[in-house]
Image 1 (cartoon, rainbow, N blue to C red):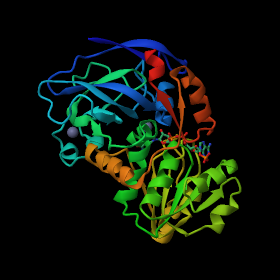
Image 2: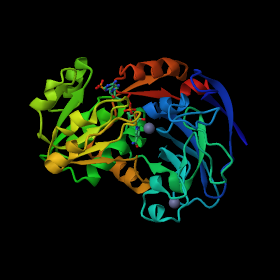
Image 3: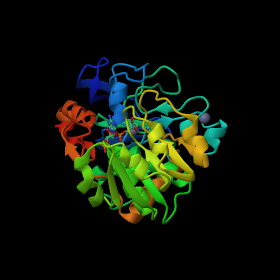
Length: 348
Ligand code: NAP
Ligand code: ZN
Ligand code: ZN
């Protein structure tokens, strides 16, 4: 076993502290990755604080991992030492069910094996995430980082990037479509950049009026502060597609009004339940859908798409000792626009 430094939450609502975990020596199909950067996703906070229930402690969060392959198992075909690679939200799945066969491992019928707060396929060994210096992963669940990408700014693509790319693609967003992005945080700012990359006209809806200039600098065509509820009436039936990334409870019915006839709103944010009025959908024959990260193949497609258009995340790079402070700022919607941990700070 490989003794590995990490940061962990030892119980719900307690701050993250230095901790030691063990990684397995790479088996025949495994690669050992030296972690360079790991993004901080709001889902890390939801889980470290047990806001979704069932959290497994001690928990080493982190599922936006970029690093270098430092060792490969004897049977590894896809990777060699020195390759720059990524690991996202899951590190295994059954590989046999319909979802896995169709490349949508995130919907594995046997349950995907999450990168952390989960168990390996043996059903016993806990998984630990990217707030650590290295990780051992099966070669089929590793992504190729295209050459030339700035690695700190690429780490957030492994969750925030794929989570926004997948619904935009699936629902056929195309050049000229009017797209609303709700919430300008980690996911939201990637949604703006990726929708712009697809040629859409993008409007940001935000409860933080101070983010207007940033939104426009990120590429948005328009910015609408949501504190005054009359904006929902003023912008009713304007949008082909709305991507809702908000992490806290809010009124879906108000945002559904923004959709034109037959338009679609996709929820990716995961707050506690909120009431929904049938009329919000019945009128204008609107669609409401959800979306969960993306499969391995689609995640690779997203990385290649982002590389081809120069799309990366806007990040604040921090040493790992600042992780608890970063969590507080994410909760206050004060992240510009993803915190990324420089893992060199844990190695020294
Ligand atoms: P984040 O960086 O904290 O961004 C969330 C944004 O929501 C904030 O920046 C803020 O934007 C807005 N917001 C926060 N509190 C609000 C409130 N009380 N009222 C209205 N708006 C509010 O979080 P993230 O990492 O992007 O994650 C967003 C959500 O997606 C989380 O719930 C996360 O668990 C979930 N998630 C889902 C998936 C998936 O596969 N479906 C994947 C990753 C994450 P403004 O300041 O602009 O209003
Ligand atoms: Zn995430
Ligand atoms: Zn499966």
